[in-house]
Amino acid sequence: MKEIVVISGKGGTGKTSITASLAYLGGEDLIVADCDVDAADMHLLLSPDFGNPEEFYSGELAVINQDVCIQCGKCQEVCRFDAISVVNNQYFVDSLGCEGCGYCARVCPAEAITNERPGVGQVFVSNIRTGSAMVHARLNIGADNSGKLVAKVKKDAKSLAESKNKTAVLVDGSPGLGCPVVSSLSGANFVVLVTESTVSGIHDLKRVYELVEKFGIKAGCIINKADLNPGVTDKIKGFLDASGIVLLSEIPYNESFTKAMTNGKTIVEYDKELGAIISGSWEQIKELCEI
Image (tube, rainbow, N blue to C red; front, side, top):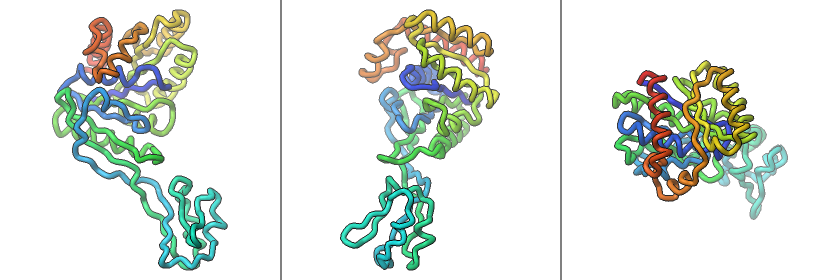
């Protein structure tokens, strides 16, 4: 069982549209993992049934027991995040401001404050319209994505794929270079880098590949909107060649990407010409991953 991760280094490259297309092409052979939990949107294209919800707890949050609190104010004095306020002579913790450091609990003479693990979201194992399943998450409003939620989504997707004898897990990773991306790459067999023909596109491609290189993972690249700036596209191709990255395909700019998404379809279902290009990329990926 192989693990294929799709990342982009930046948002707006068409990564999720391409990942959903690969999921459609892979059909029942794949388990899909939406690890872009900060801005999850694979559900718009793959129609999950949001099955098997499971609460996810992470981080720490100070909680004041009003029955024990003596209103001395020491907790508010020491809080460096201004997360404790007074309403009607009672002290309350602002959940968005609290960093869970626990200092207020240590100085409380009445031992009225405890640190608790808050629920930050839900994880789902859903049936999707490709005939397979997708593991995905929904963060609560204002909740942090520490990377642990990404690790949970990946772990569950991998376990499901092994139990159902699937050939691969297809992961939609987060944009950027933070903890969620690092967590997405852990254990991967192949990385698909999606970039676009812009100055920021090649800049972020180089940055994210430095990270991929440290993991020692084989990589291929899809250049989206390749005809936007031929000069930049040539530079991207030069970088890929020098770095030993396989050029999987060049996709021209096409408004069908947006139209397909607004119609709830993947691009391979919506546009035959673009669909053929992405199908060719998928065949290359399968060959490179030996699946």
